[in-house]
Amino acid sequence: MAKEKLPLEARRIRLIIVSLPILVASSLVLYKRLVLGEEQRKLPQTIDTQNKDMKLLDTQKKE
Image (cartoon, rainbow, N blue to C red; front, side, top):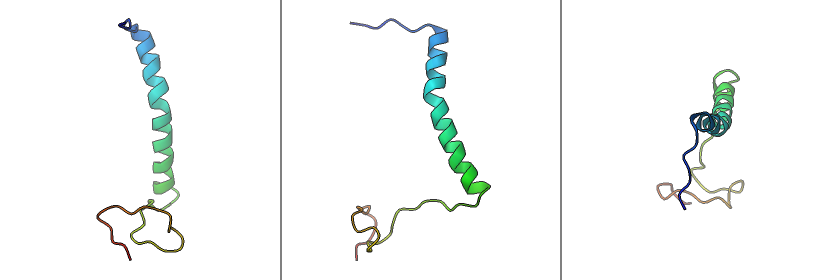
């Protein structure tokens, strides 16, 4: 069962609905970093008491 192709206006609305939340979220993160001076979030390099339940990447060291 092939779906009918959406009209141009419907495709534009779908594009807006999908892309707008991504644009807002990434803009908010960028604003916090550049204007408010918030530091970039980083993955933990080692396991300690605060992050003992997190998985480390293969390239990272375990203690």
